[in-house]
Length: 309
Figure 1 (tube, helix red, strand yellow):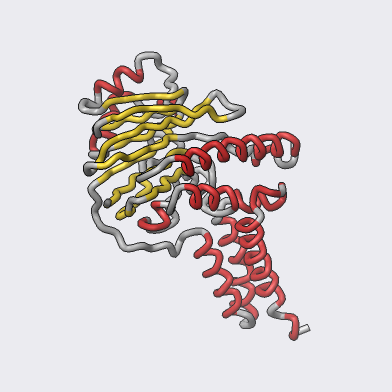
Figure 2: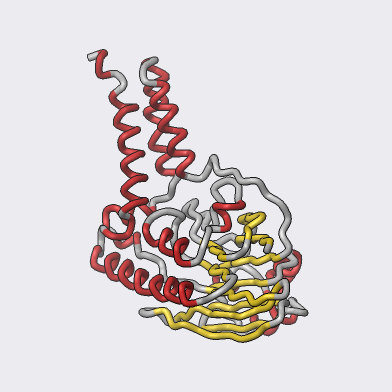
């Protein structure tokens, strides 16, 4: 019997490693691994605690249990740390929940204090018909353009705009062509749909449909990124955790994840589930600092990134 005492730490290590590998490599391609890819990463940390307590009590397998906990903490982003410095281009993305938890004055004041050059808002189809006009009035010096429920505000010279419909939704990706540091800069503001993970048990067909629609929407974004020359930022509430094939496809089509390059900690932008699903990917720019701000004006948190040429 005593020869089998490390069994729980061993099993926990296998489960954690297998879960991360399947979620990362297969992800959305099958329904079971999709759930692994979208599971709140703190669940893996919590899974390690019984094994750690068991190993401490039995005084066997403590090294394995601790290694498993560190692996889960690393995968959850709790050990993420990157050097940071100030940048000369400030871009913020924020899902504002249609203004349900704030006022135009409060939101405008908070955004103005960030001193951002570009502001990317999602769910900006406000319930109050006067909200948008009052928000714009609270942000003097910014020019605003919109496509469906996304809005981009900028104080940089605006060279042009374009839209790309996202299939299956009354949404579109908003493309703005700007000028920064003497050269063109393309910024894409997007909000693809969420995978309906909550329907996994009661309606697997719905989960499958939402997954396939998301794949088509992300195909639009990756094709747009590949066809866009020069410096590029793709940002927004992308409803995509920082792992799995969908995340890798965006990173490969655009460039590095700004938070992965210049952030610290897990960077949860959707605190309700402890997930980082709002992103900025960039090309031909250097992310210098990335932060998820601890605001309570929405169910999301803003992601502020500073760039250098």
